[in-house]
Length: 264
Image (cartoon, rainbow, N blue to C red):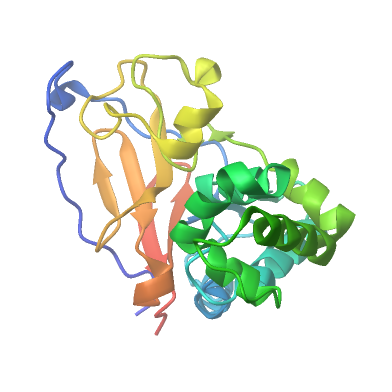
């Protein structure tokens, strides 16, 4: 059955403002599908896109918003980037591809491979390099080998794709729903969030409710099922190792629906 609803769990606050106080209804302006972390699982992405194309409750054109982390860990990072870039180019204005912390780590590696290389390689960068045909690198590689690998990856990406990755936005707004990769500081207005918070998260995000009526939909934190709790919607279901890539569908006046790459 299409449109499979994931389990919903209540988050437990750890201090600060108590989460039970969040009462603002979700109010979006446009229909949109939000897609969680892909991490090189292009096959799961392709399956999910078929599910979305055939969603019987889809009405007309809906936006696509990807929540970041397209590279690392899975085996098809290059293919995932190319597919996303093609989708975005084919429907300008209707597709948003947000940046995730893994895209940031990869770009940091390209900018300073000696300083950032080992951390990135230990968090899935080795698989990304392999998807571009760059092998023979390890987490303990020499400075020279790291520099060579960064140069090879820069050449393999090419200037157009590199510029596209560097220009990925950090946030997408639809009514009172804000899409980000990792989370937000509940004590700051959404237009005042630091980039690092949006990419890496905040310690209070999952435990303290916002008091401004804004909802956040995010990836980054992996759950066995998509979750809704106190104005937060989490849809990273670990596609690179579970094969399950999740999307959330929102439409004005209709509750959130979850679909995933299992289809059927």
